[in-house]
Image 1 (cartoon, rainbow, N blue to C red):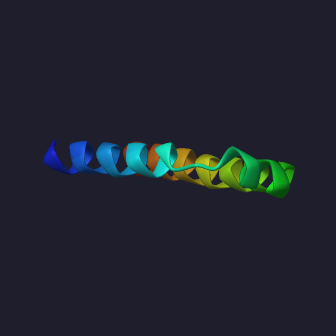
Image 2 (cartoon, rainbow, N blue to C red):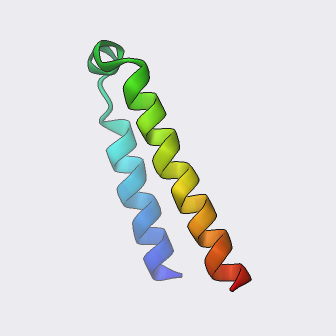
Image 3 (cartoon, rainbow, N blue to C red):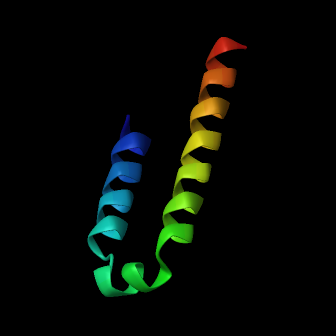
Length: 51
């Protein structure tokens, strides 16, 4: 439980530091890379629970 709370806090602080102008410069490849990582995490979590 405590580990989850710490992860949420870290991710929220990291997300609040996003620079929109920098993100616009990087564009679509950055968004696609985020989704690839997200999909890998979802499938691995499902595999661990199902296994």
